[in-house]
Length: 117
Image (cartoon, rainbow, N blue to C red; front, side):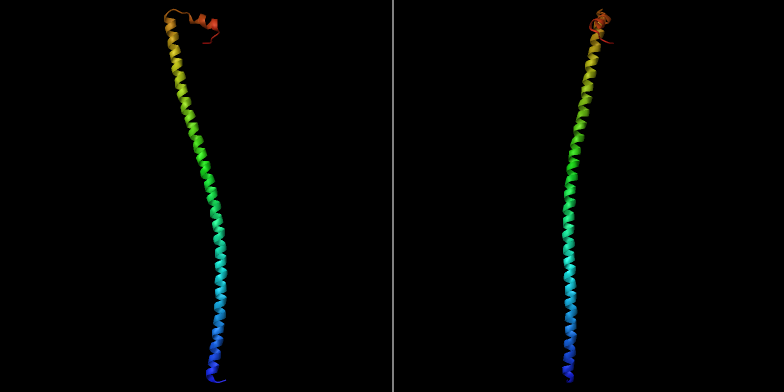
């Protein structure tokens, strides 16, 4: 083999080795890309699950908020009813006092109708 053929042969071997190395690197890159794709799919599924859970939690919060608002309204209504009962009680006491001033014996009325004091 002459010198130029020898150099060409060596260059060809070097190029073939580099091509093999590049093909291995390309294969590794493809495998890495596949792994990344797999991870991306897993993360998308996980995000979807988390989104579903978040929606469920928000729904529970809305339901609880409505329940709390209903209870607040009930408490307000009870307070108003208590005020109305107190007003009615005061009016009845006033009527009793005016009856006593007119000379009506309230003790006899209570005995007659079995009313307590």
